[in-house]
Amino acid sequence: MIDRAIRVNDFSYAEFAKRVNMSASAISRYINNERPFPIDKSEIFARELGVSVEWLLGTTDDEEIFLAIFNQLNDENKEKLLDYAHIIYDRQNKR
Image 1 (cartoon, helix red, strand yellow):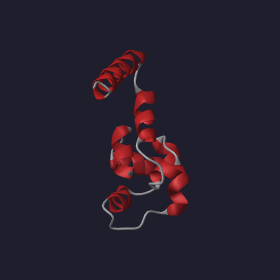
Image 2: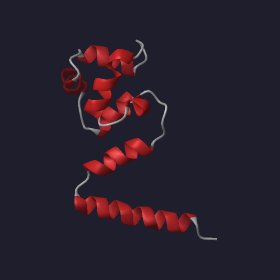
Image 3: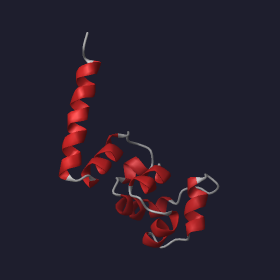
């Protein structure tokens, strides 16, 4: 989850580590499951990644990350995405 949110925000591990006052190697170890996630850092991680603590801890679904991506789009791309979503929805519901 952390890795996906870091990529969505277009952060490098080093940049994200700086934002949360940790080393890039520590971030890498969390992402690679070499070290347990620091629950005490969950609020700052979530804030910097633009997600909820619940999403970060895996207790919500992908809707939140979709909204985080959507909210970072400019108005033109938001409109394109909504148009595409309508196309997919219509195809899905054709009988």
